[in-house]
Length: 455
Ligand code: UD1
Ligand code: CA
Image (cartoon, rainbow, N blue to C red; front, side):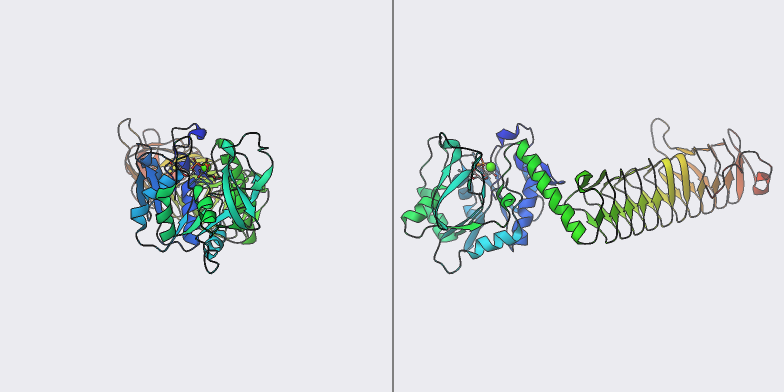
């Protein structure tokens, strides 16, 4: 997989193949297509410069790397992988910047070497020739590849069979021919020269047609990046819809490649499902939901809300306008209403947090009622502190829980209380700063009863 080029047309500090496409680095899509086609051993050719670290990170685990000392062209890049390729009998050469190619298509490309005596097969489709290399064909026999960039007076909007940069090649033939390629006028050594060599040797390359012309599209600049993004997103949405997910307004729904969604879930307009998000079945997500690396159980409702790096069990409803920040764990049956923020906290089963609250660094039990305006004051200006709230506790409206603090099981706080000390099980905290009383004192306290557990 060739990924050592500079990608100058992106005009970016980030190497081209590390740019995200539907939530994954471009090169990762190419690697996955190769794996899907049964390629077990992937060698990614990276440069020797500082930017190579970003390419390596983008390619991820489970691949090997070969270093091309200087970007002397695509044939030189393949040569850099000679040692890593070992004695493999066949090589699939892929451009790291052609991410829409499908596994099935690559399988057909590799199969084209079987039987018919060709040493080289290359993938093509007819698309506007732009800056690609195009193929001169005689039937499906390849005569040569011509770089559009180096051809004067060509209609670049006109469709031609282009060179996708994906090749299947017999290894012994490849390794024998590579050193014989003469440099182009710009000093680069072009892999595309192999096509002419094969023809001249009397065993011409064979062209394999992609099922979908989008598969051969490369990404050289950000216009092509956006075009590829549109194609990839459309594919992802279609796959979910065909698997039983309702998507009310596909154009306003953005779903990353790593997202999983159960059947009979509806994704409503203006929704972003990003990263490694996983959603159960029977949910209604959106309108206006933004989920990143979220795990959501069955039958959840998430309206106009944001969930980041958090887990939500089944039967949770949330929103509008609430936010789960990283490290939150929301148990089954929880209700999170309007303008609630939860960070690095656990909310136990059936707990209700209806209105205007912040819960951070807290362990909250089951069946707790968190009154409107409740805040965990978890930060003292230097350090973060924890709050614990026991099962069945009742936190009155506008309670300030000054951490570290523990509210016992079945305990209560009065409206407007500022709790600076632990409240034992079944006790009641009243006032600012709060005094602790026995629970029955709750009767007759204005405010404490204002907030019902129901709503
Ligand atoms: C190349 C092909 C062109 C084809 C197009 C398909 C050549 C000479 N041209 O053109 O026929 O239509 O791809 O998208 O092969 N790379 C290296 N080391 C290098 C140079 C490039 O690793 O020294 C890598 C790049 O990172 C990239 C790939 O090879 O992933 C293709 O290089 P790029 O410069 O984008 O070639 P194109 O001009 O697109
Ligand atoms: Ca390219």
